[in-house]
Image 1: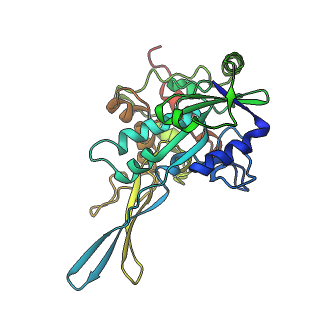
Image 2: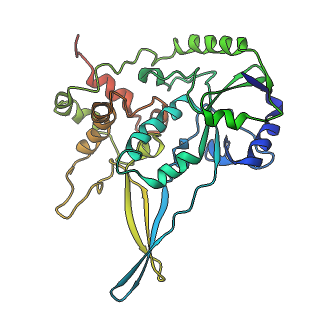
Image 3: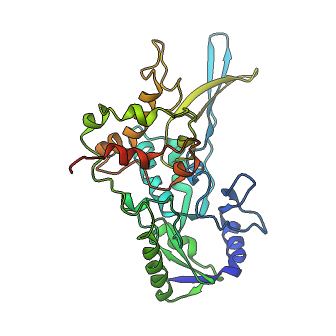
Length: 339
C-alpha cells in the first residue's frame, strides 16, 4: 500500500501526466466531468461525474473512415491511429464495472478495433467512495463502492490518499513515483468500515435484482408497462448519462471534398431508433421504454452469465426530467412476485 498527502496530489498529477495523457474528474459549469489534466487543475469533490468515463473508450462521436469518390472509383481511407497511453484517475466502482459490460459487447467477435485500441492503452485508477449518496444502489449488482476494481484502487482516508495496484498495468504505473511512500493498511480498513455503515442506511440499500435476469416473457407481457411509460418524454437523457449504454448509429457526411463515415451515440428511446425501410419495429413510446429496461434487467444478464447491464450509479435517478428510472421499474415489476 502506497500513500500521499492530499495536499501533494498536484505533484502526483504532474508526475503521471509527464509519462501519459492524464484525465481527472474536474468541476465545470455543467457539472463534474473527466478532463485532460492541465497544470493547476484540481479534482472534483463530487461523488460522480455528470457523464461517465465511458466517453474515453467509446466517444460520443467518432470518425471511422473516409471515402474519395471519382466516377465509379471509390478509395477507402483508414483514418485510425494508434491510441496514446492514457490514465483515467478517480473512477468510481460503479463506472469501473461498466467497462466489463462494454467489454462483453465490443471485445466479442467481431471485435471493435476502435474500442479495443483504447482499452489496451488505458489505465484505470479507481477511487473508493467515502460517502455514497441516496441515489446510489451499486450493491444491488454486487459492486462494492468501498473496494473498487481497476488497475489501481485508491482510497481517501483523512488527509491522505492510499494506492493499491491490482494489475500488472497498475504496478507499472506506480513504479518509480518518488512522491509516493509506504503506508499502513489500517486507515483504509477503517474507511471501508465507515462506508459500509453509511451504505446500510441508504434508502436503496435493500433493493434486490434477484427477481430479474430470467422469466423474459413474463416481464415482457406485463400490463405495468403502460403506467410506467406513460410520462416518458423519449428525450434519451437516461441513455446518454448511462455508463453501460452502447447503442450507436453510423452516418456518412459529404464534406464537399470526400465522404466521412462516423458513428455517434444513439438511444433506444428515440422514435427513429432501428428504423428500417419498412418502418420502425417499435412504434410506441411504451415499446421503446420497455426495450430499454428489458435489456438492462433481462436480455443482457440472460446472455452474459447473469451480469446486469446496470451498475447502480444513480445518474438516471438524478437526471430524468420526469423522475422515471430503473429503480421504479424494478420495484413496480417486482410487486407481488414470489410473495
